[in-house]
Length: 158
Length: 80
Image (cartoon, rainbow over all chains, first blue to last red; front, side, top):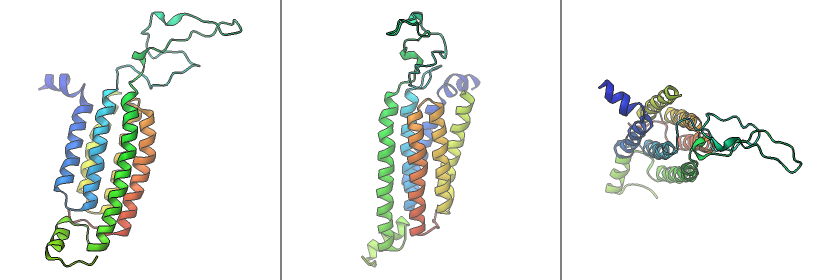
């Protein structure tokens, strides 16, 4: 059991948490009866999927994907070829610039994809909340079972 | 940094459950805002700074405002 936790749970804790949080959101979408609660569950579901994608880009010992031209101090020494001092147009020696090595940076591609996913998520939430306000105006309630009851008996004003 | 990550992920699960558990919808919205800020912190720690500040502005700010506006225009109590 100790072995299992050290080898499987702790190094991949992001993925375990992502599965748990996603299933919490899915449970809320199915089992909760209030429409606002369902929408909070939908947002939790979306952010869990974003958590999965961002976790894919993480590397050990890597820094944020921005090339720093002023401070060449690396997080850790990876490169043998990184120390060629080069000259600018005036012939002065610049400081020891590291060539950017891909292993030093986290993978930015999932981040860019998830940036659009966040914006799409908030747009979905906004439209869904507008629709539930309109439902409240027609039915006078936000509870799913009461709305279904009113639709079945046909006593609502639109 | 590993432990920081684990603490935030555990808090994330707790706030997600709490936001769905609370019967007062205004409290649920605020706890959902806390959830968004926690996940924003997690992304800053994981090196996704662009995602982090988009989440802080859009996820925690605008989503919470939308939810609170809807709660004020409708009912504050929830049956579950």
